[in-house]
Length: 107
View 1 (cartoon, rainbow, N blue to C red):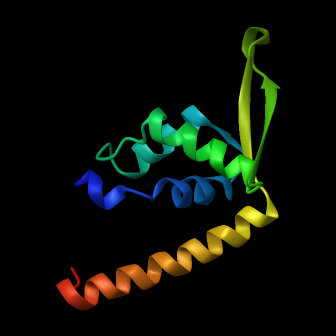
View 2 (cartoon, rainbow, N blue to C red):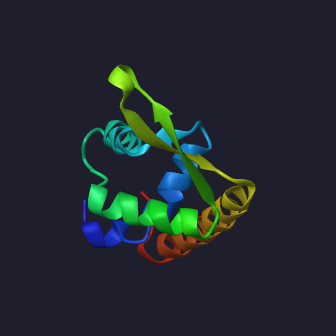
């Protein structure tokens, strides 16, 4: 898949996944890999900066949870403002898809 098509999609992917349940980074990476049949890998270099921006803007919140052996993992959850942002991004995404399909045709 052309990476240029995927630019800017990380925030909508992250917010969408977090509507299901709080997740840590590796879970998000695995979910994208599974959902795309391995055709797309969400890279850590794209995921974590996006998460940090979303957290700084108060769209998501993170907390540390203890896991096996006393280690801790940072878990992210979506906040109400993040749900509102996701609704706007979905609307924008749907308008974009409609516009592109109107020009290049559907499947």
